[in-house]
Amino acid sequence: MRVLYVTSELNPLIKVGGLADVSAALPAALLKQDIDVRVLLPGLPSAREQMAHMRLFDAVNSPFGMVQILCGTAPGSSVPVYIVHMPDLFDRPGNPYAGPDGNDWIDNYRRFGLLGWIAAHFVDPQQSWQPDIIHCNDWHAALAPAYLCAANNTRCKSVLTIHNLAYQGNFPAKVFDELALPKEYFGIDGIEFFNQVSFMKAGIVYADKITTVSPQYAYEIQTLEHGCGFDGLLRLRQPQGILNGVDYDTWNPETDDAIALPYGVDTLERKAAAKRALQQELKLEVQENAPLIVAVSRLTRQKGLDLIIEVLPELVAAGSQFALMGTGELEIEQAFTQAVARFEGQAAFIPGYDEKMAHRIMAGADVIVLPSRYEPCGLTQLYGLRYGTLPLVRRVGGLADSVLDASPVALQNGSATGFMFDQLNSLAFLHAARRAIECYHDKALWRQLQQRAMQQDFSWAAAAKRYIAAYRSASAGRAPVPPLSAGSK
Ligand code: ADP
Ligand code: GLC
Image (cartoon, rainbow, N blue to C red):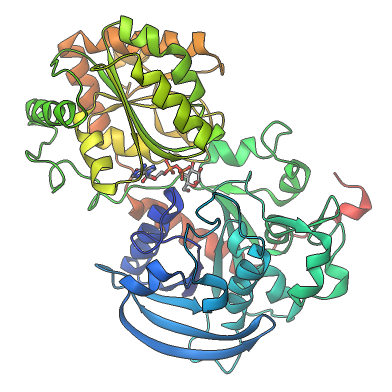
């Protein structure tokens, strides 16, 4: 089976968040299961600069102008990578979506329209390699299924994976004419969404199969609360939830070269050295018995970090320390800078993005916290589990699917791996944090929880098998969906 995996991020070439980790790990896991998988990326400078064995694969006259497709591999990977090389659209500072001022590029519809168009162009009979499946990730790639339909393709099937439904790629209606799609596609049964062009909707409507990154999120996005306006459509399309995995070659405390003294489930006492080193690095008081609670996160409302600011005084008063590393919205950055200033030696904020430091934090901390408003999957809680850094999370999305709360029953039967709260408020959060702190001070119990957490297996091999089954089901044909215009919402 030949799969073209279309994504806007790929670690280490282009990374903003978890999508990059998934795009690096899932294709590699598919390759191990004999899938002929290749990745298609926008040609950002950071991708071009780091690619190995790069050569020209093709030059194409697209509706967006002449474009080159370059081919190579990412460092340390044998998965072939194609990049869409069009300097006018992609040679810019900032991240894949926005400039250094944080504002989205105004021509994102052209940049990602092109990505989708090129993906669909791989199906052209003249191409030397033609996919059986185009696997689109998030709105950035979601126009590809529409282009496939417009080309009357029947051979290649498309799968859309939703990593975050809140980012939809919506643009003013007037851009539609530039996308080179049939006129009738701009309608309620097509890519029109409240009189805008919606890339995410295009994917949801035209893809043969929809998946999302956890079973719980698959359920949640079919509800009014989390459906971001697409819940009705998603109830018709029935997304399948496949929980993300962890690349244990990268995230493993036994082999992690970012930490001085590696440790494992039987050598957990060595984790204390990583904690000491981290406290020193972050200028926190070196207190062996102070539970160190951390977060490594994009700074955005989704992550519910405001709850941490609310309870920080109580956390410190309860004898714990706190550290956050992240970048994102300026307001959240400022709020944390102010909040930690009151607790010198007990709380730290590291503005910025540092992959190695993320590993040192994961190893040195006791608790990793994700109080998310919503969380399609979440990866840092999965990394925390492997590092014996117990997750303290809100029961939502992939967090609900990957952590087992230390309830009295779970503590008794030894199944607990972390701490959870339900309500999105500081009281509920604080209550869970206090439970975690109490458990932390019972050394034998904490060790038992850590060992249980470290033994959890979220390896990609199992998730890759589920994706292969999803590709097969897409190939078998799409279930008929009644048109929205028939009033089937
Ligand atoms: P999301 O994709 O919503 O940001 P995930 O939990 O799926 O959330 O993935 C976040 C990824 O980004 C993890 O690999 C995490 O370590 C990484 N990350 C987030 N912020 C930073 C940062 N400031 N420095 C280094 N890595 C970060
Ligand atoms: C998105 C989600 C996150 C998920 C990641 C990878 O960025 O916010 O929850 O883990 O995609 O699928």
